[in-house]
Image (cartoon, rainbow over all chains, first blue to last red; front, top):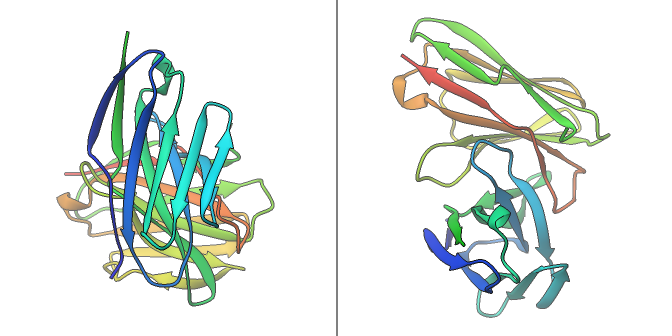
Length: 112
Length: 112
């Protein structure tokens, strides 16, 4: 089967740095994605790691270690608007197309 | 404007009703997806259509019936649902082998 684990909640203050970890078990692994979802909104894509290492996009960075089946999302210079749920998702290939399997999400609360 | 539009945004139905959810994408993608999002649970992949052919059906009960008449439109037909089917139903689209999904804002379904 396939499964992903991430913390259910994280709290941090404005301006701080927070790391959200994700461990996974899957077959046919192609890469790890991160999505952000504000309350009542659509999940939106943040980053994708197909290879080991760090990917940086502005204040957000994502890391993948395929040998450890582990990745994380790093958010720097936290802002109030970063309060949202963050989902890791494994991209796997089965059948005729790729598909994303999501974790349960981490609710990030940024406090003043 | 996410490029993926879902209607209706909210739907209340009885267990004996028949209704449909609609999804439309204007991004030129050739894969479309239905996900179910319930509280405290991961986004659950329901169906995947690639090039208008259903390529994934994750053991979804037959009371959910998808339809993909062309690459821009996706429907989810609902009949004789149960209260536990109440959830947010998210549509997404992507290029067939891409790691990034574009989500609609979802249809919030309540089954009485």
